[in-house]
Image 1 (tube, helix red, strand yellow):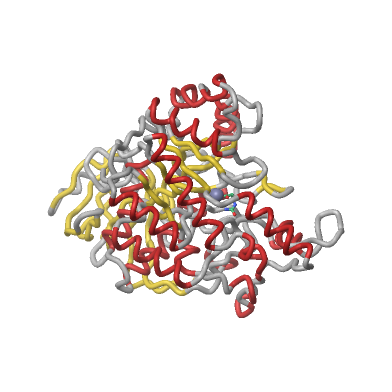
Image 2: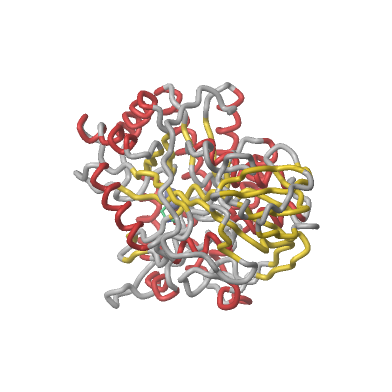
Length: 474
Ligand code: URP
Ligand code: ZN
Ligand code: ZN
């Protein structure tokens, strides 16, 4: 054996029990009481929890957006992930109009490889152009390369119309793939943006106002209806509103394979951050501008309830960090002319905070640790076709393991204890109960409780199996 984690409490999506975990050649080789050391390095996990590393199903490393590129790339972004107990990311790479999907994937895999990810990664292909049969066939080609998950945007200039969305859904059903959707009503959003700008409202609050609960909820309902029409499964990314939660719950109760992801920012912040920011920790309203924006308390409560009842299947970050100076383009644009809420690059940091945050909420009793593992590791592995190697502490799975100290208090401070490339985090000052004290990727220590100790380039592309769901259960 290479590594023996002794005396901890193993937490799975279903149960918790005390046992040792032995690792050989990067895989979990044995689980049981009093396992022999057999020359392995022994880690004492008495009083600690032993968890599968999280899978963050939604990141935007090195993503071009709003005239810049998100600051974390596949190297520093995965360092941040690893130091927060996330051992696999799924990064979005979006197809340009006219660009064959297979060409996009080839290029992005090469970029990722050059940047040197420190943990394993996979990709979702953002669908930008399926206007011809040939372009649609790109889905088959990238599937042969190991990608079976796609995302359509109902908003943004690079988004698709409902026809392309429907055709993506039907083709996904034919080939065994999962389609994710960023659901917001584009036309109403555009109308509201113009209205507020004409009225002279330029502040970040109007980012929320033009992408409010109804703008998101209507699109959630429509996306679900399109999936029903196409007879396919659907994965709603970054679900943030009560109407959407209800629509997902209803569809699932009717037996449709509809799945939803939410993000820690919608569980912790409300729209109030767009009024004042958090001046006590140096955060301005523009620092919180992401899409979709945070919503009201009613939506936040519905999301927590959705997690408890199984309506929300996964947690992911939508990690897409931009510098403070770029967030200031909402005041003065890059070219020196006056900015407004539409000229702020959309996105916030979060990849290092997801697992510690949800585990801290479990530690405080809001949900069980099993539920935290289910939504952060087990379910994303299943939904994105990598449960053959990820998502659980089980013999034969990759030894992607977090040793978690429930008694370690931790306050997030970007300058002191965060590891990405960004100059601020919306999570600044948030106090957590418990924190990872060791993180392993393939049995190798990548986080020692304080610092990143892994290796550049150690992370590899993980291929996804074909994905097919007939019912909401798996
Ligand atoms: O604000 C965000 N989330 N930016 C990235 C693009 C998206 O919509 O996921
Ligand atoms: Zn999105
Ligand atoms: Zn996103």
